[in-house]
Image (tube, rainbow, N blue to C red):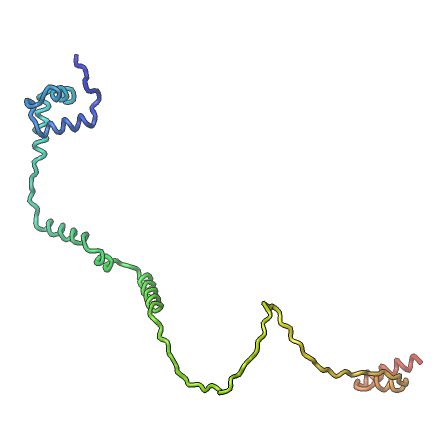
Length: 191
């Protein structure tokens, strides 16, 4: 009856067995390594099969490649490994996005360019006598009062009592004939 010395096969045991398969034959192993191989692999015969498999798979074979496959592969590789500026230049954008970028660039360039200022030199005569103005500032003012004297003519009307005849005549002026007859009949009828 076999007893397990190492328990479950851990990463370190796997790495050690893998290293042993690549480097040593079963006869070159020490006692500890032989116990490890027997417990995990099952003995010398299986160890030798695994070793031949590992050594056979580790040798690299160079397979011949057809020229058409090689050319298409090289074309794809060069296309994938282009410089960034070439990729950016060949990137496809919708027309509206290209137009928006062009307008944005023109606006930025227009705003960044220095503006030319036109300097006009003009000779102005200054009078020989200085003109002085006096400004009195008392403090911070927020309301300005302007005083003016305005003369307005005053008309006084005096009401003098009129006679009845004048009242009737004044009431008839400026009215139509029909209105005047209505007023006369009203006044005559009330007497």
